[in-house]
Length: 307
Image 1 (cartoon, one colour):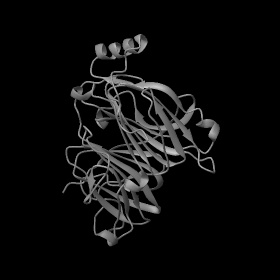
Image 2 (cartoon, helix red, strand yellow):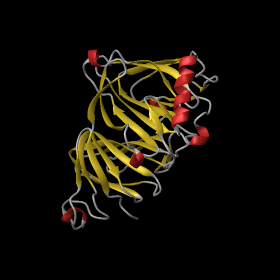
Image 3 (cartoon, one colour):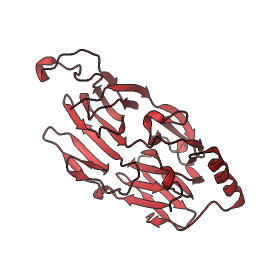
Image 4 (cartoon, one colour):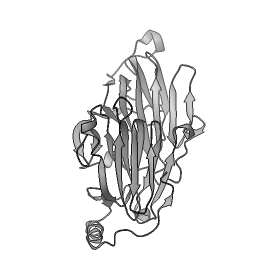
């Protein structure tokens, strides 16, 4: 088994999207080849309703999948084909935009005005750029949860992990999407498919991620390792991009640590990207925006359910 060293650690940066939603962007736009097949990750956590209620009014997508995972509050959504719904705390919406959809997402706070969720964008391979749009809406109770003997807790949104398979299926990039909590002071090793690109995003607590081919800077008397290279210390809103290997290791700090662990098979295809549309060539990108102007952007009925 080979531990994945940390390739890069960055803090999510403030951004404003939609009609004025204040959020933090972990990565997105520019060169995202290290994250392939993923394009963007936004953390829309906010306790000030004025900073998120304007939401994300009607906008198009083509050529990608958007994955929305809500932890607090709700997100009401609708699309150009008449679908309507809402996802609440613990729910996930996996939307395959495919050939094109126009939709809106309007966040609402909980009773205390808190809103928290994530949106991840995954690229579609060239062969599926123009596939029929599809929704997969998953309620919190349908997401498998695993609790290990040491108290580590994992929600499996997509993919197979420790014998449990998440409900979102038929995804081109063969992704694994996990919500992982490790209790204070514990060290955990988590398997990751060797050929996948992988990253973690810390959103509660903090800890240390292995930053070498083996050891991690924790007391040697507790686990018997020697420390040869400093670990990557990650706290709230830290993004950790891993290098190659088949497992990652984390040591939780005094407050424990909770993070998303995401991996996927790289597409290794050219990317032509502008705003909410991602294609393979500039000609395809121009065509998409021309179709938007002409009113010929939408191709067919959405598959699946939006709520």
